[in-house]
Image (cartoon, rainbow, N blue to C red):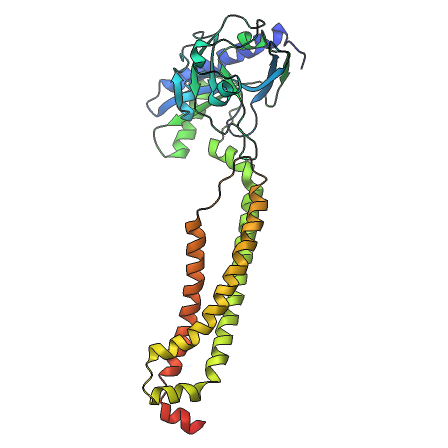
Length: 346
């Protein structure tokens, strides 16, 4: 893109927003629609445009930008922490900006709604609101300064760099009141054909757009789950066979202990404690290795969220319980045998 977008480019964006507003207004007239907004970039798919302007000290300030309209912030459920939302009426707040917390933090603003962008290049404008930081791109990327504007004129007047990451045609995002997606889709298409009878209608769910960014991680998760399932099955078979072999070789000892008055519980614990030592040793070896592998995977994300230690504790308890269940079951059946018959066979 050129340093300063051409007037024709700005006019094209403004005209396309006017067309999108016609469709938004037709949807707002329907009771099935809770709210509707207009956006250039889709939330969550790294489609926000990159822009920059020079600061007074000569440094370049880079930020993300998205041109919006209607009830965009309300429809997406973004949280306002200061100021107000845009006026949804077409033409209103044409020189207003809404920023995120990261934008204010990067410029050192304590009261952003009382500030102006630090460059004389920008036309007259007003920062009317601040939204809570949100992940405008995938979790692989850090949250960046974000600016929302209804009209490109006020923004393009001050920037000296622009990188477009998505189509320049706006999209209408809609939140419905019901859960019948088929009838909801039919409604959207019906209203579209009324406003744009000669244009093709396309529709997608926002959660599917966001989910598409993590399909590789989902495939990895399924592979790990499948591999872990096989490993657990093999471990269970090995534990069962090892316990059976150990108990079958000590039937005489079990018979003698029963004759001397040993309870089934004490006999079961005699075998369990041997296998519990092996199980606990395996847990102590497996947990650090699991944490190391998990850390390597989590490091690729800018937004990191470790599982709770409760999860690891429950897994360790599950492993111990699994061992107790298998060994105790076999020890119980062995202890139920008549000691007279056992000693006679021996």
